[in-house]
Image (tube, rainbow, N blue to C red; front, side):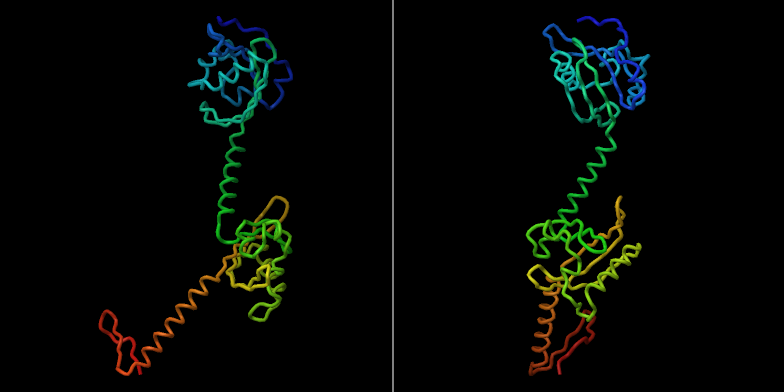
Length: 287
């Protein structure tokens, strides 16, 4: 098909006053009817702003002339719209300007296709970042909890596992003191002490402390807890990171028992035993 002269604009006046890029094109096919290119027929001002392409410089020209390294996937997709009348919607990356676009394409007439274009690059990057942090959130071995002053609002899967709940849904809405014994080992009331730490964190004062928690079955366990203020759009919250110290405490106990055993062996030996360091200085001896 030969290229045609620029027809009269078909976009209408309304297109000049909306913040969506709009462009009208006519498809070009080869002898076999395959879409190989397209001609720009008209664009609105916002399309010019989004793409940095001026109407006066592109109308009547081929897409491959206007857009460097125009990808065939776009020509194929637009050709299908123009030749079959089937609408098309996609959010995808375009090498041109290195942006992500949300594209709606439809056919307003024979061999024509119009597109609406929205730059969603920032939204895409935000969603990817959110996905990344969500993955980190869920893959953390420590319990990560978002809470207000009274209850857990969100948590990762490790939280449910640590506290012995079957799922995250079971622990959401639970208060911090509900998964703690009534009294801490130092004799203080768990609810009062937890409320104090939460209030301090809410005021922007990071908190870090040792705490005795309690699993769903009532089993107590010792943990280290850090609290930091988290500003959400609708409320002030605290992000808590809880590390179960059970294994560390058990490892320390075994080391201590081993040391006591060796000390007992040393002291009960009938012969004199002296321990030297690498500089041959005496550092220990039996009685």
